[in-house]
Image (cartoon, rainbow, N blue to C red; front, side, top):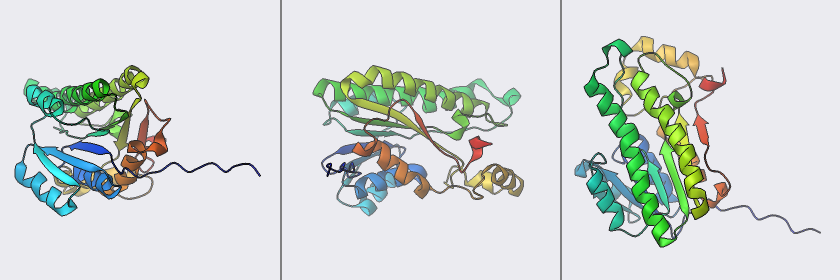
Length: 252
């Protein structure tokens, strides 16, 4: 009888991971998923109290690192001075929804600088440290279904997330020779502190639910399996793509 194939492991024992925007919502879920799989996880955010509280709840595999990812010098320093990470979850982001004719330069800079510029240089700093140390691993960028479709009042957010998708594909090509994979996760609307004010508008919530074919708003837990897949050896041949978790929104 032929030898049966061995199922790749989803475990991350002995791996080091870093999650930006880890103080709340999706970032907390990502950090918890990675720690549950055995990784040592560094939680990054601007607010010390938030990430320290989350790290304490997760337990001994989690530690907090206070960092504003918009401070590119601080970003470079953090990655240069630490052991190389095997997994990056590039999660920090923001949104300023409004019609395109109301968008100010300050709005543009706030959204594009965090969602794209900071994401680029966080990934660069992480990858440079991995390359110089010969560390192989996975970069995971938190995109959005709005990086695959358009939406009213989302010109800035769509611009940043569509750009993230292109950036991700180019990263995958640059980093493949070094054994580093790069992918995005593209969620639909997820119930988080950032989205809670939007869902207070009953009409908005109803309009969203008409688009999500599975009939419910997403939860942070809905992304945890995808993070584990892309972080682990179970996705060893997956790079340069986007895992869309949208309840069927973009299938229509």
